[in-house]
Image 1 (cartoon, rainbow, N blue to C red):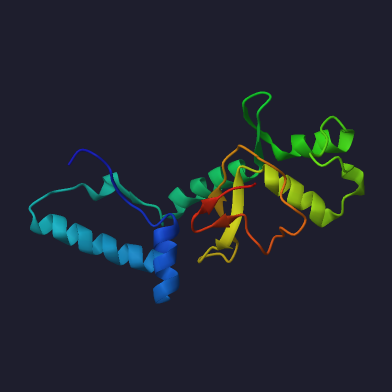
Image 2 (cartoon, rainbow, N blue to C red; image 1 turned 135 degrees about the horizontal axis):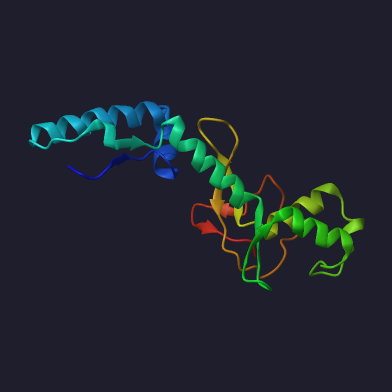
Length: 168
């Protein structure tokens, strides 16, 4: 085989299985890799193991985590039709260049309300806890904002659900 062979434990199916069975995603994925390679061998296929990778490898997932952080710290600006850093959004709110949809002043918001506003602009939402780290999982949100979430929407009530993710 001339192409790389990849094994995936990156995402909700592997994490959901881990939660249901109490087995860490890395353990289950490594067992599946051994089984899959055994099956390929029985079929008579040869594969150079140096040309394979797994999303459970530290050298792989450090980059996926980096990508998620880049996305998490971004918001979609329809005025320029691209993602921009969240720090620029906060700076615009603080300077008064950008106003809140409901007319409230940024300076009058509590820290929790500010976090809710910023979260409503983010390109990703926090969701269920990640199995391996205990940190919130990140799921993509669509960059089209219909409205700012109400104050009732808190960090405890995720804007992401099994049926999808949305900020309005």
